[in-house]
Each structure stands twice: as C-alpha cells, then as structure tokens.
Image 1: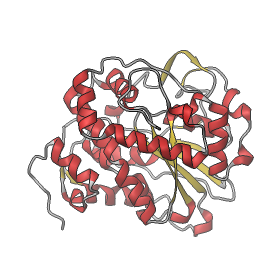
Image 2: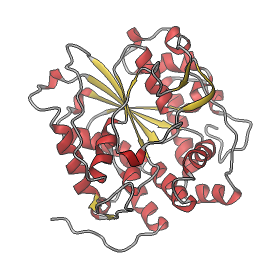
Image 3: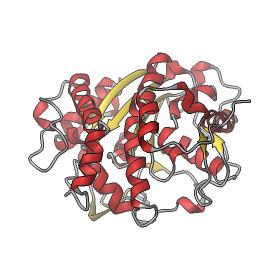
Image 4: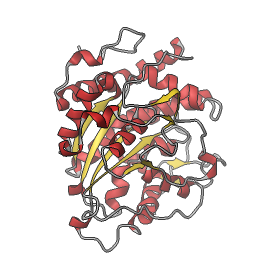
Length: 342
C-alpha cells in the first residue's frame, strides 16, 4: 500500500512538485474538507477508484467499438462549456466533465454510475470537456486522460485539446463565480496549482502516444476562423460549417434546455446555479471579453511568481502554431499578466 504524506504541504512546495511532474504527488494526502470531499485519499488511490467506476461502462468492447474521443482539458473558466456546446451543435455527442463527475461522487462517498458512451458504429466521434478546479486540491491535480486510459479507453482513440485563457480574466471569473463558496486564499492557491498542472496533463498524454492540440480562448476573437482550424486539426472538418458557430438558438445559459451538452448528475454540494449564465443570452460561439473584476496587484504578483503567465504564453504560442492562426488574435490592449505571443 502507498503511504500518505501526512505533512501539510504549502503552496510553494506543492507548486514545485507539480511543475516538476514529481511522482511523489501520487502519495500526497488529499484531506477531507467535510463538504466537497468527505474521505481522505492519496492521488493514486483516487485515480484507481475513479478508473474502476469508469471501467464498468467500457467492459466488453473491442478497440474499434470505442468512438474517437476529443477530450478538452484546462483550468476551469477557459471557455470550455461554450466549446462543448459548439461540438454539440456540430452533431457530436458532447459531454460536460464526465470523468470529474465520477471523481466528485467518489470524493463525496457516493456510488457513481458508469459513463455510458455510445458504440462507435452509432457515434464515431464524441467530445468531452474535463476541467481543473476550483474547490479541491484533488480537482486541480487529477488527470482525466489517465483515469480514462486506466479504465480501458484506448489511447489510440483519444485526442487531447489543451485549453487556456488569459490568466487575469480567468482568475477574475474564478473570483466572481466561487469566492462566496471557498476562501479567497484557497481559491488563489487552487488557481495556481490547476494552471501548473498543465505540464502533468500534457506529459501524460505524450507518454501514452495521445495526439495533443492547443487552443486558447482568445482565438475565438475570430470564431469561424479558429473553430474551422480546430475542427480541421481534429480531423472533423466534415462536421463543420460556419453555421456551427453562428447558428445557435438563443439560450439564457449553456445548461438550459437548448444546449447540446450532455450534463452528468453530480453530488448536491457541487450544484452551482447560474454558473453558465450570460447577460443578454447566448446565441453563438464567440470570445467573451471581461474586465479584471476584483483581481488585485497582490494577485498578479502571485501569478507572476509561480509562472502562470509563462504557462499561458506557451499555450498561446502553441495554439498559433497548431492551428496556423494569426498571432494578432492573442494580443490584448487591456491589463494583462504577460504578452502571450511576441
């Protein structure tokens, strides 16, 4: 049995381990907070339990029975839900954090049902998004691709899309959406760790031979151009038309009855009414500009010290390269942590 690291690890040490993709992270104790997580786990044990639940839905399939799955991952509030709706409008079954939902049930000591995916002859391509954060360290460190592969999903049928967004605007969104549910200092720490976990998620995918594509929310300043490039990169050009981007029925939020996203059942503690609401409604896929909200100079200093700006700069440069997009899309005249693409 793997022993827990029982000592409290501060942000500086945890950030160092995450950036180094240190194997000892598997043995760190993930303590209960009594609300979102009611049992202690170490990360390896949590991963194994989630994989076991997922495996129940995958049994009895040959490799060719699995649909090609585009799995989008990033820190929460990077435009991932809008992207999930985009793929749903294009005609793919599109799932909202299915792996994370199973993990949340495990953390809450529930018995989650399996993720029931269609056979490939019915749906040759499917999409899901699974994002990092915001409530628990476990949510910042989990690697959904690892849970899927350990559950039996063939690496050959996976394509990882690494998502990101200008960190100042992303942090402002975290503070708007969740500062009433979690202490501000903890929310900031979780934001940093969720961002730095990028290296672990991408490293795992590459070790498994999973194809990787990068996409940042700022690319959606030209939504038809960037979406067409993304679908082409994924081998899904036949699913894409400009109306995929512009032809949405107006919705009040991305979880209303008009959305094309398939939402899982999650533990009651995680219910967040209004999380996907947008003033004026939603009628297309597009970049959503926001102000910097309550982000302070001290917050910006924290992001700089931990290299959050550098993570975004690398993501934006990789997005421009992967999708052959103009670099001007990633420049912003507003307050920023760093220039994304020189």
